[in-house]
Image 1 (cartoon, each protein chain N blue to C red):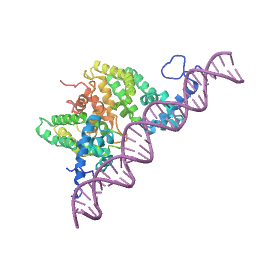
Image 2: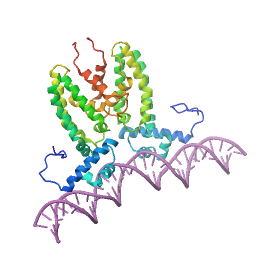
Image 3: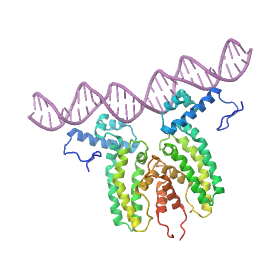
Length: 198
Length: 198
DNA sequence: TGACAAAACGGAGCAGCGCTCCGGATAGTA
DNA sequence: TACTATCCGGAGCGCTGCTCCGTTTTGTCA
């Protein structure tokens, strides 16, 4: 979908050609800077790389969350769409949940500081948080429900809590061999499974 | 005048009286400010509250991590000492691990932004991170080992990973009724338990 | 007690950041 | 070509972390 701020459809008012061009330029530059300096990189740095003024960035993306959202939109979307596909193709709903989680974690871990931003207790990234929830929560809920239905995991877990938990576990330096979020998330899912007895 | 300040034992030659006094004043002010504005509160604010200049704070606590560590030292210590006690008194090592985890989580959750700081990928809080690890990792390892020994949980989990996982799960606003780190940590420990059958 | 050096203090000052404001440039249209 | 709505750029403000240095306080020794 068109990258619009939350608020919905705007009339087919097309922007001026230079504005359109600058928007793309900024997105490209932001993606590069985020990859090297993390999503907290100074706006000035992104502006310099894009060869535009700061106001241009703020005009297109009023908050940092809007910019981050726009940069990663495609990947978030891909992650959302993968959910139903995995559910259809995997051996079991539990298996699908595992695979989807792996996908989600891979995405978060490879984006420097993205997981941190998502769970930050400041409100700077509220819009990003909202977008993630809006797109991925239903997917996670669907997978969870299917696994419950199949009797693989016990009912009662809230998708929101699980998603935030997974996101939280992804926080931190990604170059520490002593800490691999995947192992902990595997434990978490293990704990979710219905015990054989009782 | 044998009044020796708490904390590490330093050689007999100590600081001037006014320095000692200011150190305490700053610690008190910092504790108050941290409680209301979080551990990221501006140094100026703490200085103003303590009625001292900023340089005084930097002189006593070169980095923010040093200040935070000093403020929470007693509570961290208490948490560390509780480990062996719980192990001795609880019904089982697994039970002790649960109780200790609760203690740890309660501590983290009630300190605004402390968990965030602990896992921040910036190096600003490296000293704090190191202190936590130094004091609490052995305790966690002891509890974990005991539980493994008792056959309650399966071997192979690294204490470092578990501690970081617990810390990570505590990150975020603490006023969200939809997210309770305790529930997820319970799941994590559940996943750690040795399966009864097969 | 008074003098004096070491220790500690305080805040001005610099640099880096987010974000805004407004004079000037530009694109689309008549 | 002329005109206007749209868009642009960067100077500027306020807020931060952290340092530097002239001033004040403390402890000691004559």
